[in-house]
Amino acid sequence: MPSLDSPAADSSPEASRSGLNPDRRSPRVLLVSHSYLEGGYEGKLRALASEVTLRLCLPKRFPSTFSAPIVRPDGDGYEVATYPIWFPAGRRSSTRWVLPSIDLGMRQFKPDIIHVENEIESFPVLQALVQRRLLAPHAAVVVFFWNNLPFAGWKAGLLRLLTLVARPRIALFLAGNQAGRELLVREGVPAERVMVLPAYGVDRTWIRTPSPETRRSLRRAYGLAADEFIVLYAGRLVPEKGLDDLLAALSLLDETGPPARLVCVGNGPMKAALLAQSPRVLVVSPGGRDAVQPFYELADLLVLPSRTTPLWAEQFGRVLIEAMAAGVPTIGSSSGAIPEVIGDPALIFPERNPVALARMIDRMRHDPALRLAAGQAGQARVASHYTNDVIAARTVDAYRALLNGDLP
Image (cartoon, rainbow, N blue to C red; front, side, top):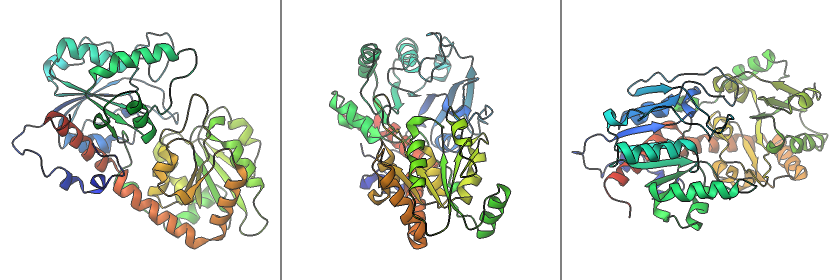
C-alpha cells in the first residue's frame, strides 16, 4: 500500500482507479467520526459519496478547535445520522465517547466497510468492533488515527492493552503521518496494512492567490500597514505550539528591511499573554476555519513553531496546507509531521531554536523571489497531495484494494 509520497500516490485519481472491476457494486461504507461537525470537510464527503454508498454517523454536538458553531453536514449525496454523545469515562475527550445506538444503522445499511476516524484505543473504535462482530460480521473495519508517539504516563498500560485488543480485528489502518505508520509496523502490524493518508484536506477552491488589492484592503481592515512584514500563526494558543520561540525569534530579527509584525489567529490559555504584547502582536479569535482564510490572504509568511513534548508531537498541522493553498510561504519546526507536510527541508528549522527560526524569517523577509517560489511550490504540493478530492480518491482506492483481496 503506497504512502502519499510514493510515485503511485502522485498519479491522478482517475488513473489510480482504472484497474478496478467495473462490474463491482458501489461499496457500502459506514463512517463514524466527530470531525465533520465542523465546517470545511464536506468536500471530502461529497467526493467519497460519488464513489461509494456512504452513511455518516456522528454526534449531535462536540467541541470545535476554533470555537466555531457546530455545523451539520448537508448530506449532499450521502446519508447523515446524528446521535446524542455519551462520555462513559465521565469527562469530555476526543477519544472517550460513544454513540448510544444499538447498531448505528448497521443491520439495515449492511456495510461492506466500517470506517472509524479516531485513535485505535478509542471508545468509538471499540464500539464499532463490538457492533460489527454482532451485527455486520462480513464488514471490514478501517481505522484512521493521528497518534505518532508511544504511549507514556500512568495510562500507558491501559491504552496499550486496548490497542492490543483492537488491532487484530482491524483490516486496514490509515495513519495521519509517517511516524504513526512506523510505530504500528514496529509493533508487528504488517506494513501492507498501514497506509499514510490524512483524514481530510482542503477543497480546491482554497488554492488561489489573493490579488494585491485584496491584500491591501484586508490589511487596512485589521489596522496593518501595507509595508509591514506580516508573520502569521494560526492554531491553538498553547505552549506546545512554540509561541514563546516565535516571540523570541521576532526579537532577534535584524534592523534592516520591512518591520515585522506577528498576527496570531486562534484561542487558548496563552491569549492573555499574547495580547499583552500589543502592538507588536495582533491577536484575533474569529471562530471557524472559513473566518481564518482572510488572514492567509494578508500574510507574508506562516510559521508553525511546534515543540515536541513527552506526550505530543505535531500530528499534521492543517494550517500548513491551508496557508500553502493560499500561496503563503510556509515554514515550520522539526516537530512530528511538519517536515513531511511541508515537503521541503529548506523550510524546516530545529524545534525550540529561536535563533534558527529568526534566520529563516529574516531570509524570507529580505528575499521576495524566495517567498514567491516557496508559495508556488506549496500550492503545487497541496494540489497533488492534500485536496479533499485527492484524499477521497485514495481512500476509495484503499477500500477497493481491501474488498478485492489485494492486501495480504
